[in-house]
Length: 410
Ligand SMILES: Cc1cc2nc3c(=O)[nH]c(=O)nc-3n(C[C@H](O)[C@H](O)[C@H](O)COP(=O)(O)O)c2cc1C
Image (cartoon, rainbow, N blue to C red; front, side, top):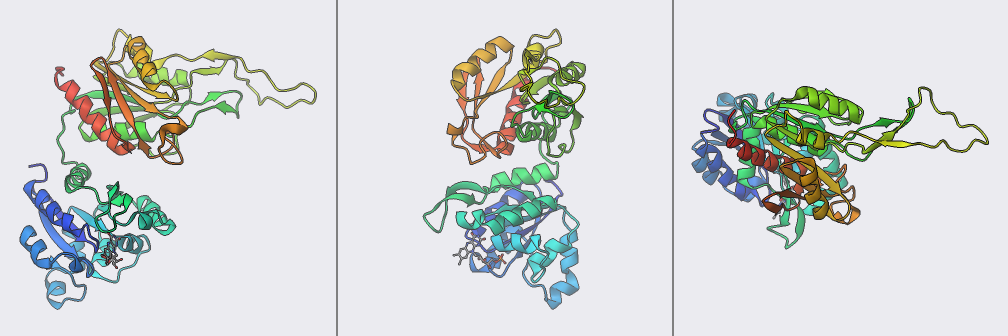
């Protein structure tokens, strides 16, 4: 049982999705966790302490000033006698309270007093989720180290509205709990996997460079997801503004040629996943000094030369890893280009994503944004995945890689 002996403190907030928290209690206990429940006053308008108590096989805690509880199990003990705190559903109100340090009931006091990791599963009306105040609180909590799962998109139970704000399903929350407690299965233990991520910067002179819009979010998420499955991940990252993922060895590079050298030095490996948006070209001669603007001389002419093709290089390498996965960011003829790339570059899979404005993914698009819609192109055909977060794409791709490597002997 993946959560055997783990202690979860589940805080149930006051939203319609509180009924799903009851199923979550069952799912966590099925996996061997013990679950203690705190319910807010509003939560008790939706479900009863009786049901939560019966499912958790424990007393349900509701009051901050409860003579019996404070004497027996006070808010400090509640907050510490757990391996992980899960807030599901996390209401807009609970998020606002924790983001601003309020502690005026048992749930918020426990959240502020804890020294344990906290996972929130928000659930609310799409307009509440999209409100600037909720966006701010979400960002603050993220910076404070609070982990999040969801919300997803879909039909809202109460309002016949659809949009982002639906609580993650209990099994998705369980998977996030397993990941946070590092308790999930480790099918990639003993496997070395190289991942590249981010853009490359190709210098024009010491202060100017050619870049692209890649943020590194997708590549970093894949590195983290592979590490969660037990892989020894070596991430070669171009210049990005996001943090190195936990549990991963990260090598920082700037130019395409540095990225190629770093990747080749890491061979042999069991698999390699090339997510980085490597510049196809660089300026032939990068100037040693800053190029000056000289009156009457006009703009400098940059002659471009081709950069090494890292994916093709590894795809045809004498030490080619057993599994080679490439990414194809295309703005037109997505599938035709991905299929051509598969053959030309010696890859097993091409993850094709449409980075055009027509992809319909959010205002920031795929590059730099948080969502992605991909197709997995292999010799077996094309598998179209629905739009999801980059973390979800990463988790699913890591599972696919684990599945493929299962048949290869370590
Ligand atoms: C029918 C109904 C449904 C509600 N659903 C939600 C919800 O899904 N998410 C949310 O953040 N608030 C929802 N609310 C508002 C909260 O119940 C309210 O903000 C409450 O103060 C939250 O308290 P708590 O954060 O202490 O649980 C709902 C209210 C009502 C009356």
